[in-house]
Image 1 (cartoon, rainbow, N blue to C red):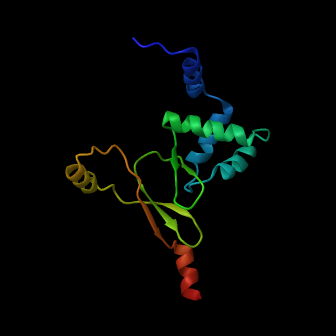
Image 2: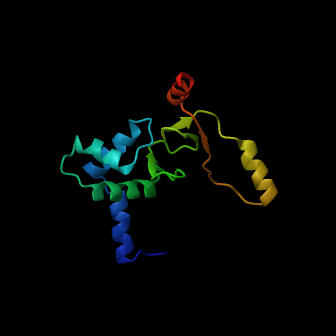
Length: 144
C-alpha cells in the first residue's frame, strides 16, 4: 500500500476541504451560463465575501479543477475561462465580441471512434471550439 508524504497528505486534505470561499466560487460558476474569467468570478464572489483575495480565487479554482468540479477552458487567443459544466460539450467563440457559449449538440461518438481507429489512440476527452459570430454580433453586422 502506498503512503502519502507529509506534503502530499497536506495537499490532499486541502483539495477535499470544504471552505466558504470554495463553495461561493463553485456556486457562482454553477449559476452562470457564461464561461467567466477568474477576474469576473472574483468580482461576483466579492459581493458575498468582500474580503476574499484574487489569489484565493485562483487557488480555489485550481483546487476545484483538480477535484473535477469545474473545467478550465484554454480558449485560443484569450485568457483562461472556467466552466461549471464538466460534461463533455462543444464551445463556440464569437470572433467579434469574444463571447464563449455552449454548443448544444451531442458529442460525436463517430469522431471518437474514427480517430481511435486511425491513430490507435484511446480518447478520454477532447475540446472542440467553433468560431464565428454570436447572434447579437450577427444582427449588428447585418445593420452595418
